[in-house]
Image 1 (cartoon, rainbow, N blue to C red):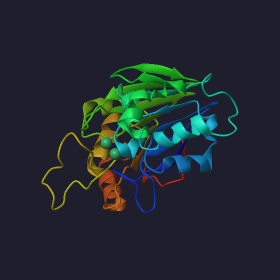
Image 2 (image 1 turned 120 degrees about the vertical axis):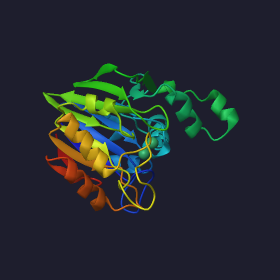
Image 3 (image 1 turned 30 degrees about the vertical axis):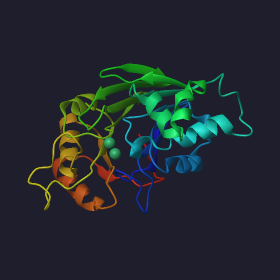
Amino acid sequence: MRLTVLGCSGSGPGPGSPASGYLVEAGDTRFTMDLGNGTFGALQRHLDPWDLDGVLFSHLHPDHCADFTALVVHRRYHPSPPFDPASRRLPVFAPAEAPDRFACAYAPSAAERATTDLTDTFAFEALTDGASATLGDVALSSALVDHLCEAYALRVEHGGRSLVYSGDTGPCASLVTLAQGADVLLCEATWPHTGPWWDEPPPGVHLSGQQAGKHAAAAGVGRLLLTHVPAWFDGKDLLAEAKQEFDGPVELVEPDATYEI
Ligand SMILES: [Zn+2]
Ligand SMILES: [Zn+2]
């Protein structure tokens, strides 16, 4: 499998990166995990969007899904589509509220929202806790994690290799369980563990670098990739925290970089 970072800036786009989004290529199957602000542009540097076999969303905060609106326009109004998009609707694995959420993001008025149904070109499948599914050559599974809204960590497996993406989450056992023994954990690290803001980071929102390292160690993953560092923090600090807790290889991901899983 191959993971390409479309964007990794936490909580919104930063000066050097779009918000969260990743391209995964596994055998003949290609899909994205999240499409935050700016990622649809980055995607086109790496793949013709018509070659996507599906899109996955960990949750529906804008920094993880805002560019779905660009995908709608591409799918509906491209002047020379290689096939009829209505006859090959793109699978969308996302929290159950995705159709309403994306209709609201796409349609500019209440009148248009009332008639916006994106199922003309997309086939929505609701993620649930503990669910598993197949997308082409890839086995998918999802686990509910601890965030401000319905949010999932995602596990993808292909050819005996496994990648787990945390999405956004505070510390939680379900992430450790889903990531057990994974070759790679792509894990959010959004803030430093200590600072002038708190004695302990607030629960149920995000992970510190230290907490990301602890989750990787508890899950026994092979490699830890840190992501979702906002522009207002220095990723090197969070990387140093994670290295204190996890003995395996750890690195901060970079936009447009590709990682073999
Ligand atoms: Zn986020
Ligand atoms: Zn979020």
